[in-house]
Amino acid sequence: MSESLKVRKEKLNRELSQYSTDLADYNGRVADFNRRAGVSGGFLSQSDFYSQRQALKAELSELNERRANLNSEINSYNSDVLRLRELGRAD
Image 1 (cartoon, rainbow, N blue to C red):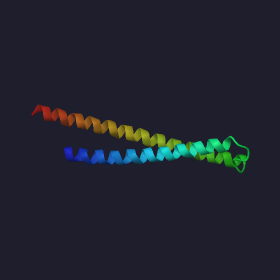
Image 2: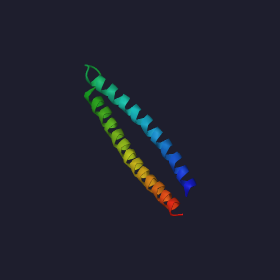
Image 3: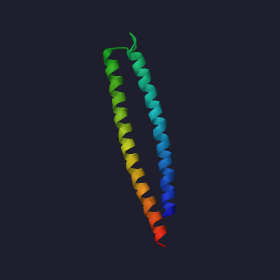
Image 4: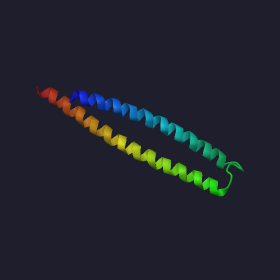
């Protein structure tokens, strides 16, 4: 079981690292969007503004879903680590 936990931990660390990178990239795009929204001519048209805004909202939904899934996986991992530690103490 401990080898399985090691593999899961490595996978979680990779996924968390990718999530952090993706979130930072998203935040950069939001900052750019907000900067352009604050200046006249920042978007080609009102339609362009709404289209880009909708794309950012969709991306945020996807990031939130990934975060929730990661939190669930982390909770499951932590429970399994505790279970393994308890089994070790029972010996």
